[in-house]
Image 1 (cartoon, rainbow over the protein chains, first blue to last red):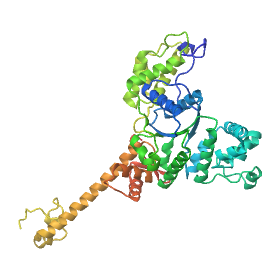
Image 2 (image 1 turned 90 degrees about the vertical axis):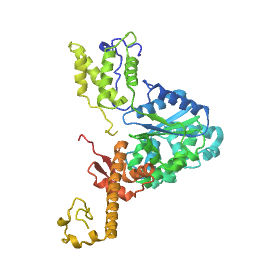
Image 3 (image 1 turned 120 degrees about the horizontal axis):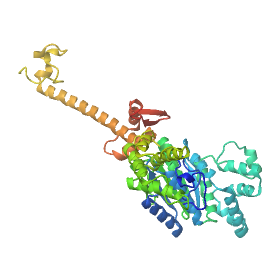
Image 4 (image 1 turned 60 degrees about the vertical axis):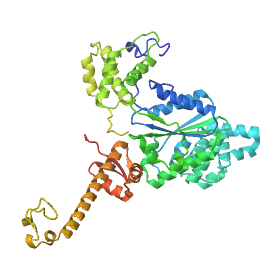
Length: 371
Length: 118
């Protein structure tokens, strides 16, 4: 329920905000609807990350449209609220020729201001020698982050391009600021990630790396997939404490996860696997009711989307597609737009038959669709 | 030998329709050992064809269940993990996926299943 929003745009619906989003979130979110079991698993995972020191590697499998990205963004939010966990959300690129592309995606999500501040604090408290030890795997981070901390926007851009393995920087420019080499190979990338993780861990109890869309490892040659897996497990091995990786996969069959990763990497995964399938009909009803309730105006008891319409919507999705959050959002977004339109235009309220007819025109993902 | 005996290679093909021409002197008909050898070869070829079709079906089922594009080498890994007693080479996987009407090539050795309703 949203407080102090009288007279909002959707007051006629009893809502302070529109409850249904059809595009993935671009940032962290604290919103969580239904799926109490998964929520408990996530809370348990976060509890463990703050309770224990050793590094962890978790796998999250989600069926297509099940809300995997939302779940990662929720974890990111919860980690930020926690304060002791530093989250980094990254998306695996569509095309990868080696581990370097995945590295670049992770490095693009690094908060360099935080890294530069951590380095400065470390140098101030423990001296340059200790700083060199912490980032010893990739010593070029020292001049790079020093430049980032003291320089202007152009320097920031330069350091960022170097750190994300941009190939367009000249050696002369790199030497001018004291950087010895570009990040070109998987070994370089692993070393840079190790150094960066250790640096972050001087300022935070844990670094949580959330890697989305790792199912894309299934679209590369076997040798490249092995190299990517090897990069992840070497990085993981190099940071035995304080690092947590969550690797997510979205495809139809959860048993395929094991075939896409190397045995070495699988042997390091945590026993707690997270899984997200379709919602049950009860969960779907709760999902809609909770999404609407979260956006309800403070002084409004009920909204235009009443129980009967919720039942009709869930039934329609279940009959023609999978009961995934994406399909449920699609259905109820269409219903709510129609309700809003009718109210705004002074037309008769949406009857059950009209709702069913409207839902017939909504396209739902089926089990044959891909993500 | 009785004319009603099952002929050699194909029970649906009567002897008088055979290219050999002379059913009474046909070596396959006259020699039970030879006939049994030929039948064994035929059974073996039939089983091989059946297994080939089963492999094709298994592979397409893997792609269908995956519901996302897969490189043929990764499809091979999934296949080998699931059917380790029925090995297949990654080249064979490539050949099957590249020629299957229900599979769509996306380039670079990546494939996905065509939608049934498209």
